[in-house]
Image 1 (cartoon, one colour):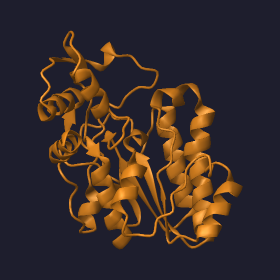
Image 2 (image 1 turned 90 degrees about the vertical axis):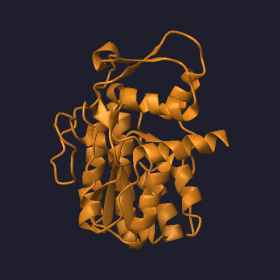
Image 3 (image 1 turned 180 degrees about the horizontal axis):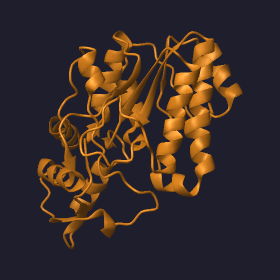
Image 4 (image 1 turned 180 degrees about the vertical axis):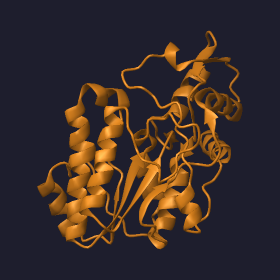
Length: 270
């Protein structure tokens, strides 16, 4: 999803798109072959296993892609003198803090997905000194799949009011906003970890309500608790990310989530 947006937004750069089955990031020889052949200036590492519940039941697959894969990419990038921009997640935190997490808070994942992504971050730090790790959350974008696409599909159906969780809070974030940040980081590198979610915060229920408003959908919504929707992987109650590093580096703030959502839904309608 993010890759599709990056491909469109970074068209002013010379891009080489790598994906399965041509490249397996967890196979060091496969990664070495492509990076040694291309000799890129920057490697944007957006590949990951992101199905949070599947990660709980298949930890080996999660760590193979998210940890070993990140290590293979980081080693190859360093060998060939490339800078690395790696995408990570709010799931590296446990979600128990009563304020937004900033880049200097200590991660404490409580899911296999979060632990595997944190292991990937550590591999990038260890193997590629010239790096930026961009943590994002509650992502949606062209093509999906995402919460926005699911709500738009359910919103046109008739039936009982849709129950949506109202006790988890975060920053809904568009791939467009993240791609814009990555474009800035190509020109103005910021070392270390950068939080790249949109500004403003809401719950999943508040997010759904705004999706329906923007799309002109009349189906009713009803708030509910996380306990009403038990899932294999626990969801963080607090996914909010403070963009402290952007502020310290003097980079522009991220756009507000409602502005981005309006633009996105408008692009789907027109």
